Every structure is written in C-alpha cells, then in structure tokens.
Length: 197
Image (cartoon, rainbow, N blue to C red):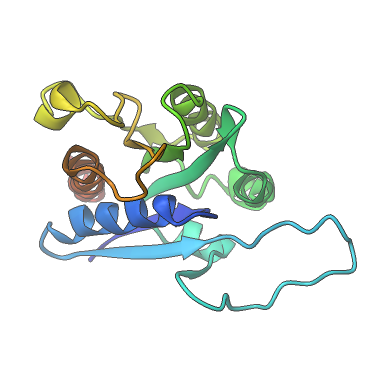
C-alpha cells in the first residue's frame, strides 16, 4: 500500500476542497491510500486549548503521520504571500523527524488557495517548498504537459495547484484536474521510489 499524506490548513473550505481532489488523484492509482489530515488553529491566548479531535473534517495531524507516509501534499490558504500560521507552526515542530531523516527521499508537492488573482499564490507555494527541501524531500510540481495547466483561466501554476476564489468558492474543472494530477504524480513517484526504481 502506498500512503500519501495530504496535510493542510483550511479556514474557508477551498483548501479542504483541493485536498479532497488531490485524494481522488491518489486513490485513482491502484493500491494507494490518501490520508487527509489538518492542523488546529493557533490561539493568541496561551491558556486556550484545542479539542484533540476537530468538530468536522479531517483529524489533526501527528508527527507519526509524517513518519509513516510515502509522500506528502502540503496545502494552505495564502496569508500575505505565505502559508497560514497554523500550518507553519506545525511544520516548525517537526525537528524530531528532521534529525532522524524520516522524510528524506520522499516525494512532496504543495497547493494553495487565494482570495484574489494576484494574492500571492506562487510565493506561497515556493515558501511552502522550503521546509520540505530542508527535510530532504523530492519536490514535484505540475509539468506543462498537463493540459489543464496550459488551458486554465483560474488557478494553477507549475509549482502546484492553486485556486483563486474571488467571487466563486467552487473549484473550476481545471483546478480540480490539477489537484488530481498532483495526487496521482505523488503516488506514482512514491511507488517507484519504494520499489527502488
């Protein structure tokens, strides 16, 4: 079984939609499992605690989810051209697996959603790649041979799938296709790496 972890933060739901389409792409490959996980909000009040299980959606990620995955899709809405603080906080606490090298050589990709056409999609995707590089992961994007990347009039970049919500919350068909493509690319690459190819 090839396990792809889809780790994301979503406040408005569009990043969660993208995660689900990436999961469809993962599970379109026989013998693959998509593991959807999210991260809790960060509180400005230090005494506030978060329930151990969210009220709805994917359950919260653990370090073991990262250790046990064969590949990773990391997603966040764009906040001022960067990933959202809750996801960054989780990533900043992965030193244990950085020391052990648990993610070295595993494939990874990134995805984002923005509220406006020039809201920082590409800078968010690029900055999300940096910690994955430090973990020694193999970075996958979307090649221009992907028809939806050449034809999209909404979201989508070679660095990874993106969604531009502006006046529409639903993903376009091209955006859905790009998410599925990332999921299947991660899965096929992870499988080849596990087989030593």
